Length: 188
Image (cartoon, rainbow, N blue to C red; front, top):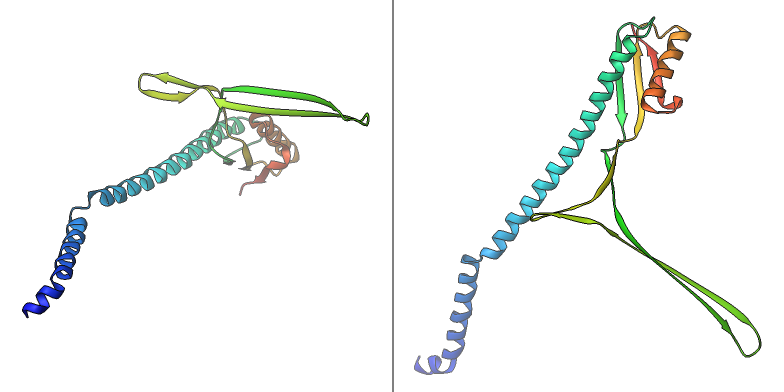
């Protein structure tokens, strides 16, 4: 036994030492649990951002639908109205950009009398950032309303050609939508 300990003692000590590092490393591993928690938090925030966008789209659609419903019901010959507006996306922010354009023009001549002109143009755009205290936000030039994919109007009285024409005209002019994206159907 004494010979075995003398022969393998160093290996056993190194094995026990390595095993203790592995056990303590797993027990006191704070960084990986923080990392998992951060990833979960990021996933939740991404999900809530998408939910906010969907809510914004729904809010736009509801506003358009309510305004159109009130306006269409005021038209002569139109009775009860149901309006469905399909919006493409959320509003878009147009951001201010600093643009730098560099143009190079080189003319070369070779020994045989041939001429060659080389033009090189490069553009570098950077978004303008405004600092307010600790916050940095991009400078917004304008906010564009979302595009409208289509509109469905179901109305009493829409079976009459003139009334249907008035409804289509009212919707196309109000929402700036082409007439092929507006469907008008008679209501029961």
